[in-house]
Image (cartoon, rainbow, N blue to C red; front, side):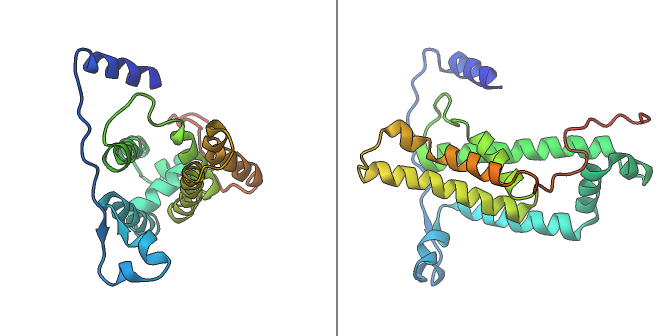
Length: 208
């Protein structure tokens, strides 16, 4: 996929010049934004950050309180039993791929619209693997994954702050900090992961 992105970028950018766009402004929520410590962190953010909060809440409600969400969960655990119960397994699997693609696209848009203001090749820098680690560390739940993502995001913010403070360490070593914390967290979660029973196992109707 990285090769496709690089090829498409070079194909579209050949002979073109791109201007940097203005990043999204922060929106301070009245009263809540003035709360000491957490006000600045949680309630003085850009609209994409608020969208994440909303999506996490909606995901929790969807998976715990709706029949469709429970159907998605059952397919992840035991697709054959779900199929026997009349749930259209293939349809839901394709929907999962589409929805995850949309959410992944939103995640990539954050880098352009919030942080950089432009697209650059390889701008993701392996963050997809960190996102996967957040899901594993979060025990495959929306709230747990959100919490793990906050930890990894904090590690990334820390390495940026340390560079700004002029800490006498190579820039490359500081840039490695989020990935080191990711590896340590994954090693600590070995044997305690609550992964779906059928994760990574293709389902073929009629097979045993």
